[in-house]
Length: 340
Image (cartoon, rainbow, N blue to C red):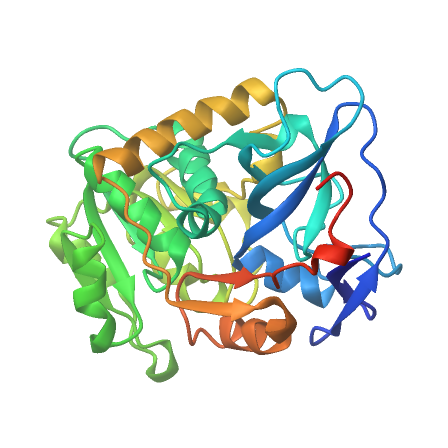
């Protein structure tokens, strides 16, 4: 038996409980991983509300974690018990637990120069940044871009990675208190967007780019920033939605995109960019090399014990914390996962 977060009610505010559940034995090409640190990201908040599930069964959310392999299923040749690994986007989620059974196609071996907690905080936003900047919109030196919401782990990773690629990064933050943080995390310029008083950011971004606009907007906010994001794009620019902390963007007439300069809108899903182990390892190589070189640094704002999941979700939903992780309990030696 292992302790795991379980979602019982779909829709509205998250309804989660920490319960003891029976962990299945790993099957063919699967391993059991005992977690040491668990990633907590905005999609996980939505998942805990049931927003990513059409099903109405009880389930364990969580899309990334780090730990050690404690049991091997049949057919597993290139992994061993005791190996440090991380994983991203397992097909049945399940990371919000003491341990989980994961297909080897989701596993990423961890280099020795990154700690478990750093890796747990970095994996999901790091792979998302790789998807956005290497696969979806490959940046060129000097490209001006906007990154909206530097308070999140994902926003800061994208900004740092873009700076490493020699892009001109304009960060959008919600208060003066966040300006210095944004500058330390890769932004050449920072604009304060106060949506509650109707103060946008498009005019300032246009001014910073001599009226030309930016090549791309990487938006994690959605509804309250959507109009400004489109207004600050240069012709043929791309709006990339990577989250919607303020709610979904409004419906847009396609003719509006053409009339604003042949704009492009993309709503990428990480699972579509890491469909096989080769893609996963490609992303991991980029990510860990940048981390080793110091081009990407992940500041962990808060660590929540797994049994305080409700408090962690509330803080994330309200934007009270930046990058944070969950810490599972130390297992009772009499009740450890299989194979330990």
